[in-house]
Structure formats: structure tokens, C-alpha cells
Image 1 (tube, rainbow, N blue to C red):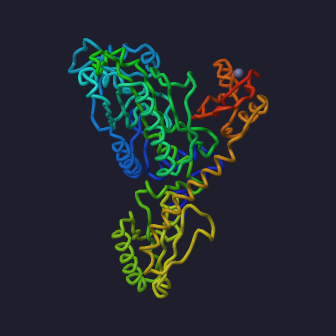
Image 2 (image 1 turned 90 degrees about the horizontal axis):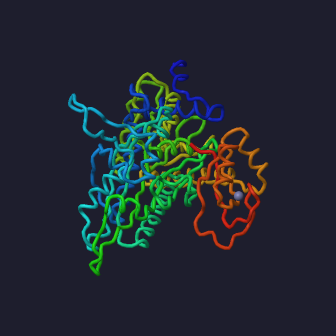
Image 3 (image 1 turned 90 degrees about the vertical axis):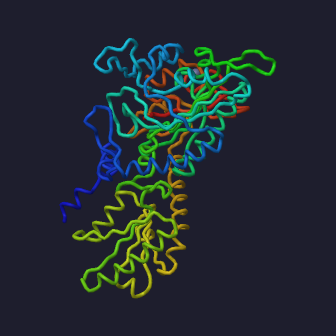
Length: 487
Ligand SMILES: [Zn+2]
């Protein structure tokens, strides 16, 4: 038993963040390495998180008026070349198919790294008049960006995502859509995934290739590094001009459409792990947990077993009927302590322990994964468990967000002095989020990146009436920006 116990244990997060992250993924059976370099396998427990997240986000996206469609995996190479910045940005990470059916293809096919080009090709055939606008589609699919240095969920050659693509009659409509989706992503990630964010636009250097403006939601991971959690792009008319995506306006004049594109990916699974996890393992927000509650029956003598199990089964039925995703752990041959550790490591938000004495007194013990020590445990009358659990899960959701928010606040620092900033970024760990005045000159941004490896994560929106001095060059600056080392 002792050996088995050790096998389940993850490297403590406080000791080795990267080792801890990999341990959780492998031991909680979220994903595995694949025989194909750069690719991963999503195991059922990891895919269940993605499904829960996807189903909720899909509903929210549809509410904005976008509808799901599906475009081909392969894109003619010539399509990618039509938009100059786009091809320049994606060329280094493109995979191409040169042979099919035993023959060399006349034109190589790109495995989609993103679908702006093929979607514009179709839009140019579907959009004729202002009456066809806005046109709003979303697709859930896989994309490929050739990566040799893999980090599960964060950076892989193939990943899953949704990509929304919209075309509008006016610049204002497209800009409004870009920001509508940015806010949709923010409220989804903060509310549903319990991950606090900073929100803003990207600097020119960090923009999506082919976009006029990129907006981002950025989270802060447990090691003090930032993670881009989603982006929404205002594409202007760049792709419309490359693909002749035009419409006849009310005066019968041909006009180019204005466009947006936006996406979030399976990276979000990495964010959930790195924001919420602790030394014991994963901590899942109840909204995405495949098992929101686990019931562990405890009996030491065989004659107690049947009574305890019957009570546990009743409880299971009650919770399942209340719409809770619940698991009854009836495994033989492992101790209750082993089960507790196992489910804690797997991140189950709430554990219910029920033993012979509890059955006799009509109570159970409830243990919350979001808290530590004795205060994580409380007793509840068996008759009330069905009504108490939903409220407790909602509390756990909130508490995970609050804990993450206080970490983010603690790890966000204002700097006026470049030397102090450098020292912070050179120290142990990721360095946190630095909030600085930046003049906007790319040279200052490059200097920061080269000297500290920190990059501009987001420039908050609606900064009015600010004035200060650029932390790097000392010139006057009217905006603050978040810089951090990032995944
Ligand atoms: Zn400057």
C-alpha cells in the first residue's frame, strides 16, 4: 500500500513548478505524450474538462449570433500567400502536405494553422449585398503549428480550439464585435473557469499577423508567469482586400467588408491547472469538474459494510437526481486515506465521507478541496446534503476565484525604475505582472524583451488622462502596460 501511495503523489508545486505541472497531467490522467513528436493525447479525464468548457462557451458564442460551421483541414498554399503579413507570421510554423494517393500534388496543401484565408475565400462567394451582413461563423476544430518544444496543453504542434470569423458592413460594427467577444471571453474565463485576468490590446509586435489590432485576456499562473488565455482580432480590411471579399452597399457601390476573428484553445486546460493547483495536485472549478462530488464510504468491519454502502448509494442517488456530477468510490483493497489523496490529487471539488458512526447519527463529513486543514471539513445532516451541495459548489467556485485573484494582486507590481524592474524579472520564479508607463516606442519594448525576457502582455483599454515617464527611456508616456515573462 505504501508504494502505491507514493506513486500517486505529485512533485510539490512549491519545489518544482514544471515537474509538478507534468506530474499532475500524467497522474491525474488528463493527457499523455504521443508517439508523434509535438502532439499529445487527451485522455477522458482531461477531455471532459475541455467538453464542459466547450459546451458552455459554445452556448455563449451562439447567443451573440454566430453559428457553427466547418471548413477543410487543408488550405491551398497560395491562399496563405495572399496576405503578406499573414504568410510572414505563419510561414515558420506551417506543416504542408506535398503528396497524396502516392503522387506529388501540383500545389502543396497547408494543414491549417488558422482559417482566415479559406474562410475569406468562401465569404467572397457568399457575400454579395449589405443584406448578407453581418456574416458570423465559428468553428470548433484542430489546428497545426509546427512546434518541436512541447509543453502539454500550452504549446503543442496540434491543438484544439474554436475560431470565430465575422464580416461586417462598417468599421464600427467590426470593432464593436471584436470588443463584444473580448468581453465574452473575459466573463467566461473569470466566471466559469474562476481565473482572474488582465485585459487589453496587444502591442504592434505581439499582434496577430494580418490584424490591425489584437485584444487579449491574460492570466497569471502560479509561478508568476503570464499566459495568454484568448485573443480577439480586428482585421480591418486586410483579408477582404486579399480575397476580394466585397458587398454592394445601399447605394449599389462595391465595398470591402470589415472583419474580425477570435479564438480560445485547449491552452485553457493548462491555465486551470497552473492557476488553481496546489502541492496536493489539481483543484478543479466545479463548473468543469467531471466529478463535482466524490462519496467515499468508510467501514473497517465487514458487518458494517453493507449498511454504510446502502447509505452511500442513497446519497449518490439523491445527488445525481439533483443534477450533480457525482462519483461513488467503492474500490476494494485501497484504504480510505488512499482514496482521499487520490481524489484530492485529481482535483474533485467536494468529498463526502460516510462511516458507520455517521450513518448512526444521520450525518456525513463534507471536505472541500479549495480549503486546507480542519476548516475544510464540516458535518451535514444526511437529509440536507442534497440541498446543501449545490450551494457549497457555488461557494467553492467563488473561493477559487478569490484565491487566484489575491495571488494576482500580490504578484502585480508598479515599477517606475527600470533597474528595480530588471531585478524583479531576474529573481526566482516568473516575476509576476509589472505595471509600467511605456512610451509606446518598440525600441523600449525590444530592450525589455532582450534584457529580461519579459514581453508586453496587455495595454489596458480606456486609459484617459494619464501622464508619466516611460520606465525605459524616460520620455513622456500616456499609457500604462502590463509586462511579464510568459508561456
Ligand atoms: Zn520609452
